[in-house]
Length: 128
Image (cartoon, rainbow, N blue to C red; front, side, top):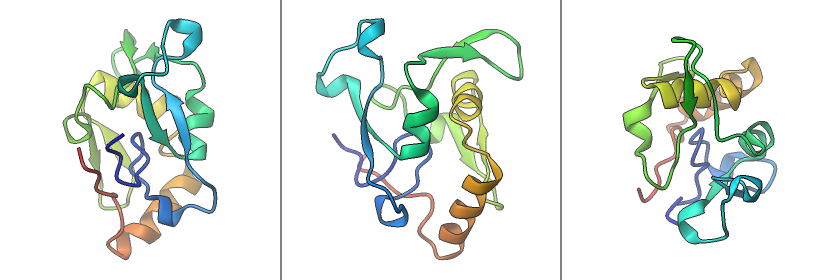
């Protein structure tokens, strides 16, 4: 899959999680997605739970509809930026919308990432 042991949405590493990662259907089967490699990605429990079957939402900055980040066709660094406090900023409509829907910047998730950030383990680097 090319994830390199990283959640392909929030970039936390598998080694930093107390739970195993899930295989996420980027486009849910209920929206016409399939089980092909181009539609599957590695997701941490939190990202997978909050994403659910969502494929789009309202961009919190523009108020316009936006698709969520697609880790098979988009590059993470083009859509997200890790701030010094380990919060994640969306650089694009897809990035902002994904960060909001997946609650990437909840206080607990930022604290978890910050500890890993200080150890040099965050953001996890994938093969992509």
